[in-house]
Structure formats: C-alpha cells, structure tokens
Length: 420
Image 1 (cartoon, rainbow, N blue to C red):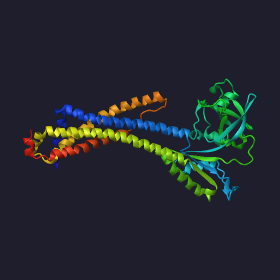
Image 2 (image 1 turned 60 degrees about the vertical axis):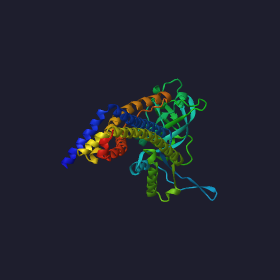
Image 3 (image 1 turned 90 degrees about the vertical axis):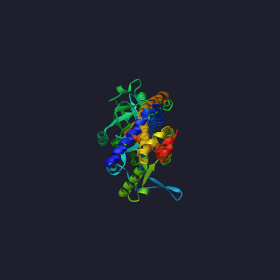
Image 4 (image 1 turned 30 degrees about the vertical axis):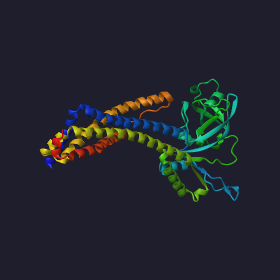
C-alpha cells in the first residue's frame, strides 16, 4: 500500500511538472476551462440575482403565493343561487390557530373590506377601507412614505389608527407633507382615527381616478363601515407560502386543517389559489433554468474539448517519453495517472481563474442591467454556486482527460521509443 502511494505521488508530480515544461500548451488548455468556468460562475450568479428579483416582484405584486380561505355564503344548485346558513366566520382566534397549526404558512392574516366615509377639515370623501392584521403588508405591496403600519397589539385591542393612501391624504390635507400628517385625526365611519402612516405615491396613479383608500386594524370591527352592513362581515383568512414551489404543499396543509375543524368543509369554505398563474410562473422559472443551463453546458463542452485536444497533441509530442517510461518499468496505470493529473491540474487552475473572472463579469453585467432597466438586480454568489463550478470543472477535466490518458497508456514501448 505504501509503495502504491509513493508511485501515485510520483506520477502526479510528473504530471504537474509536465505542465510547466510546455507553458504555451498549458496556457491554451487552461484558457478553455477559464472560459467555461467564468461563464458558469457568471451565468449562475447573474441568474440567481435575476431569480431573486423576479421572486421578489412575484411576492410583492401578485397573489400567487397566497391561499385564501373564505366563507361560502351562497351556492348554485338546480339552476339557482341558494343561501348557505351554516358557514363559518373566521375570527382572530382562527388566525392564531392557523399560524400554529398550518405547516408551511410563513404569514397569516385576516382581511375584510367595505366602503365608508372619511372626513377631515370640512372635507368628506367616500373611501375603500381594508381591515386586516399587522402582517397585511406582506400580502399586498404597501410602501409607506411616512410612518408605520399598525402593530399586533393594536390589531388585538382594536385601536383606532389608520394608514391612508397618498391620494386620500393629499385630498383631505392639501399641501401637507406625509410626515407632517402623522398623529393627525380624521373621521372614518362612526369613529375618529389617528393617522400613523401614509403610503407612497404611485407613479401610475390616474389623477382622474384617485385611489381613496385606508387600512385599519381588523380589531376595530364593523363600526368603521358606513353605512353599517346589513349582515355580519365574513373575513377572509389568507395564508402565504415561502416560495412559489411550496404553494401546493401549503394548499394541502390548509385543506387538512379545514377538514379537522369543519365537517363538510368543501360545502362551507372556499379554498382559493391562483393555480393557472402558479403553473405559468413555475413553467417560466423552469424554462429560464434550462436555457441558462444549456448555455453553461455549451461553454464547458468547449473547454473540455480544448483540454482533450491539447492532451492528445501532448501524447504525440511525448510518445518517446512515454515509451522510455514504460521500458524502465512504468505501468499503464502510471501513464494514465500522469495524464489525468495534467488534466485535473489544468481544470483546477482554469476553475480558480475562471471563478475570479466570473465574479467580475457578473458584477459588470448586473451593473449594466441596473443602468438599463432601473431594476435592483445584483449578483448572488453563494457557496453552492462556487461548489458547483469547482465540481463541474473538475469533472470536465477528468471526463475529457480520460480518453487521452487511456490512449497514452495503450502505446507499446517499442513503438513509442521508435516514434520520431
């Protein structure tokens, strides 16, 4: 065993020394792997950054990751709509139970809505009001120009606080900056509410159709609505999955939770998920990964072919050397080890340099994306990315170095020595 280790070490040393004897040939070999490895690191880093940006946009601007549980109040039977009398009404206790018991839900909230009147300083407007929990901003894009959103304690106690849309704040308090409206009071429905936040102005808002809306804690109940609703509110319980891929699992967990709490829940509760949009998004992400993987594969294939060609040329140049080594006792295994060592060394050197270049390229490319699109896209370089780059490049070196190594090992000593 010790002899084998000594022989292996010697063969590896010979293989590495051969790289420095022919620096130009080695440089050309390394160049192919540098290109492939740099492409791999740059493409994976940029694609990870783009995917993070896309997922963030999907999470903030769509309801694809949201599952809604709403009371079924009417049903279509025998050609006509029939009212359902035994539907459940979700409460704050149900929301807390869902947070504890539904696996995979990263956010849970209750939502109810309606219309009411908002008044301040002699002005009165009809507004859309949304009652929700403190995690409501996680389900819909709510960006604040000033202030904050209401806290879990304010939701539980039904504190009369409100977050106003930018258009409503400017209409009720003309000429006032958002930060100067904090702690001001306005009338909403049958109560007086303290302003704790003002949303940012949307660049796409139509001045002829302003967004007059307000958010209030779910705990304030129906007293915020005006006129008072004829029947009890039926809030919607919303669950949010961590990623698009986890939505089906969360849907199944929500169905199990409903089955444990309500008999014949399918007849009493609507479980809604944007399945069509979900399938399209998953398909788009998969296509993007396949396309980028194909580009990277082509780059690595080019680098691997470069290694194989250079090693085959090396065999022709060093045929006499191979014959002499075999004549003095080197085995076919020793020759294979020598050429595989050269291949792995080329791949390792190219991988290291390619990773450095790839990091620079990804930074430059994402900078160009930010300038061209104003989208906050940054390279995302993770340990797994570097590990894949190193492992793939080493695998390419071994795969494309195997054939030249076996060809060199099969040369008969007499024929190799006589080669000119």
